[in-house]
Length: 270
Ligand code: KMH
Ligand code: ZN
Image (cartoon, rainbow, N blue to C red; front, side, top):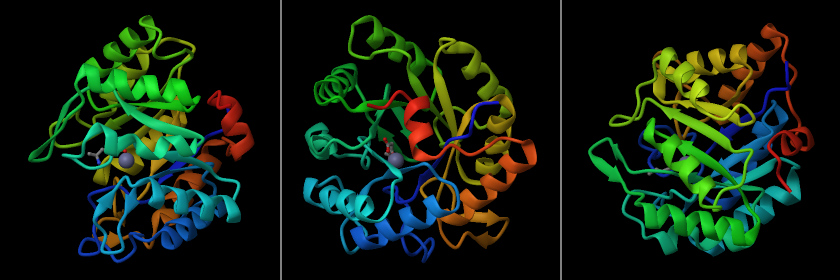
């Protein structure tokens, strides 16, 4: 089987110190966590910005610090969020893209997000896709529900996305598509055959879906953004501990881990 790409979602916009003391806030803390995740097998980190008090930000200066600190210490690929936090303007969400990270997310639809709405109208999606294309930043298409795949294919038809496409199936967000294994199977069957994909299961679904992705030949995203527990009732001591667990699963299943160079080739980055 192809080597496994592990992406570590190390920050997010919603998990706070009240939830777990291990969530990084400052650029230095985020970079240190990125280094640890790379050391135990991650090829890429997915990052959001935070202010020192933990408030989410997509501020360009913050992303510049995160990127330069990570690049100074690690070869891990860096993927920026363009989702940011619920309620942010599109301009705010994409201002860091000018720094040209290795990859950036693109959510191709609106979804209920807990009690909130993660809003991505077609004009918003087109604007983000156009900016990614203009800067040559490879998109990871975030799929929270089935119709978002159709919208991604529509944007490919419009020339705003270039195949082969790379999808991340985000399953188990309250309001989005559930994290049942058959939902993953359905999505995998739906995407063009030349696509690559990963899965990000929320909460207790994170590690079971990681196992399934390993078996199916897909890739895996884990980290405190999506799940703070390493086992029932026990906090993960960092995203690195979740990455380590997935690396163990990969070994049990006989799948090698992709390093950042291999991951960039597989994901058609650059
Ligand atoms: N924080 C969510 C509202 C992304 O990073 O692109 C959106 C999100 C998706 O996390
Ligand atoms: Zn994110």
